[in-house]
Each structure stands twice: as structure tokens, then as C-alpha cells.
Image 1 (cartoon, helix red, strand yellow):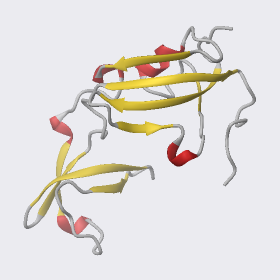
Image 2: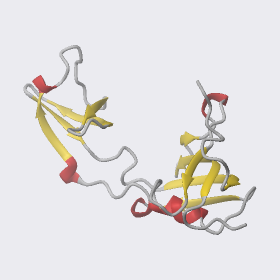
Image 3: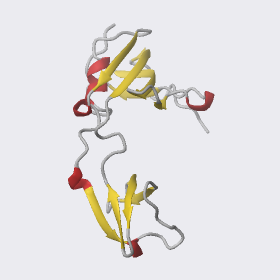
Image 4: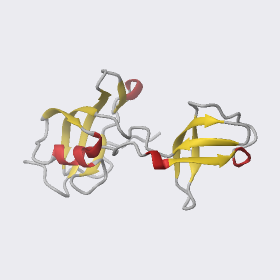
Length: 154
């Protein structure tokens, strides 16, 4: 059965950069945690979504995503200076450091500090994978299974 839009898919994946460095995997530190999502519904980046359409259970595939198919190009307009006093007092900001910021709606996401001066820090609000070409290797485990079937209770 070929995967179509709206199908619940469970798969293992390994994501790496063009230099071969692995940036993410569904089997981190020996624990298997398959990725589950509904195909074609925007729950993953567009190129990943498109890659699974038409695949079948137990099928494997490797594909390369340009930034436009993944997390977008790096946008210099998403660099923002903020006063140092907006940071928690127990942190000493340094360029290259990643901190977690909270959005007004309560979501949290990581941002990288790219510069620090006397009174301000410059944050890069781009996704850490923006502007990068990503290579994925995937294996379809199941299609239209019970939701949460592959979730692990901690």
C-alpha cells in the first residue's frame, strides 16, 4: 500500500549534513524512537513530507533537501539585538552560545547568540538548520497504524 496524504506514517530516520555529520536520528543513544506523523499535512518540512508520499511499508530511501525544501534560507533580517538585562541574571552570554527563549504564546525555541557587547546581545532567530542542505535516510516501519503505537512511556 502506497503512502498518500493523510496516512499516519511511522519511520526511522537519520539526518546528516553534506559533510557526513549526523545532526539527528530516530535512534539516539541506542533508544529506538520512530518518528510518527500524518503524511502531506505539514507536520514535517515540505521536502520530507513529499519524500514519503508513494513509499510503502519496509521501503528505504535516501534523499537530499535543499534549504528551500527544509528550514528555508538563512535570513539576516532575523538577527535581533536585545538589551543584556533581558537575559536571566545567572547566565553570562557568549557568542556561539545557544539559549532558549519563550515566545509571547508560551512556546520555547533555541536561538544562538552571535555577538555580545557592553549593553546588548545579538540573537540569530533563524532555525539552527536554516540555509543548510540536509540528507535523510529513512525506512518506513508502518502505515496507518494505531496512533501512539510506537511511543515509549518514560
